[in-house]
Image 1 (cartoon, rainbow, N blue to C red):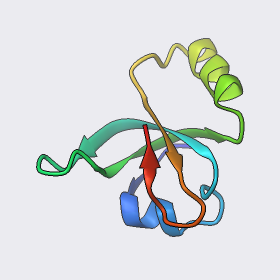
Image 2 (image 1 turned 45 degrees about the vertical axis):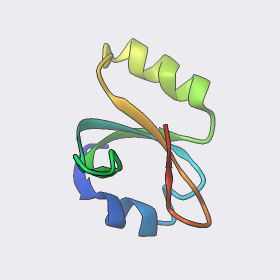
Image 3 (image 1 turned 120 degrees about the vertical axis):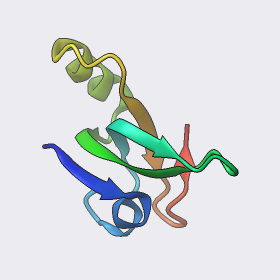
Image 4 (image 1 turned 90 degrees about the vertical axis):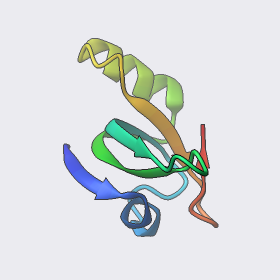
Length: 76
């Protein structure tokens, strides 16, 4: 899995809502510090499992964000 998406696209995608998403090249809004876009590397319901897979792939510089299932907000 590796696709560039805007934050709006991520939040509207059922596959990601209520799950942890690892993003590479994550870009943030300078005024609000909210995510704007990024490249989806992996996704999981369990943040520990996601982190383990990222470690195994040697992907140590990803942003890991939770996409709130009701409001599409990021929890860092």
